[in-house]
Length: 315
Image 1 (cartoon, rainbow, N blue to C red):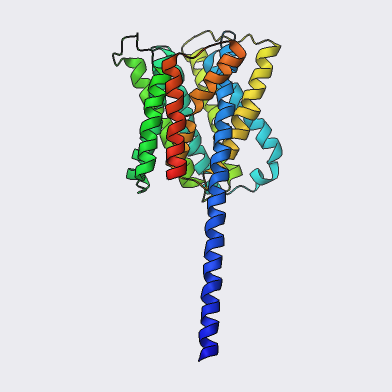
Image 2: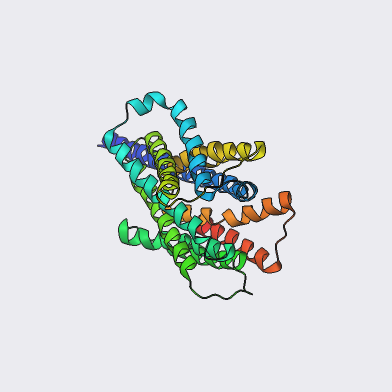
């Protein structure tokens, strides 16, 4: 009996050690995933400076199409074998996610024709609030109190960082389109969270990229042939290099990493981390273009970082 009892204790101790090891590994994967998502956000922060330099010579929808076309070709060349053996369900899931992503880009881009960049930036940033709300209803994942507090800090920070309080704040057509864009981006985060654990991430990424590229050029074709519009497209070498960076690094690489990283963290954490994008955009704007942040905007940046810390450290 003593031998059996000793063996039982040894087995329990071994199981406990395995559980601790698994728990530590899961925690490590969570932190690595959040770190990668933060790196993605830093890269996205650079795109504001790059896009600002390209838009005077390239139509916004054409820029979206070219950006995603470059990304699609780059990923396709690398993953040609996997694409040929792609599962049909993964392809369909990737198309669905891609259409959601394209919807967000279109609403955001068109909104800028009717509202200010600061109002559009803030309203689009409301995806930070919408993700945990949508997650609670669609995925049955109720966010914890620390995450909700973090969302509150991040939302207030986005407001201080993006809004120009000297402007009128009437809710106009551009504001509505911006809100629809925020909803679409929120759905995109949730769609990735739903499908990434089920299918080959590589196929999901490829299909998202091609879907956005094809949809963008289809819209350009509609504008040219059906509406008779003239499309601006006169890029120089700098613009072409910028488009290449946007396509390869700021789209293909970041989307690939996002789909992998979201397997190991929650949609709410993803939304809060992505809320730091305006902070990095401000930093690169100051560093490269000589732009400055007001005291109010600096407070907003601090609040966003505080929101991340509350959600990550306490949550």
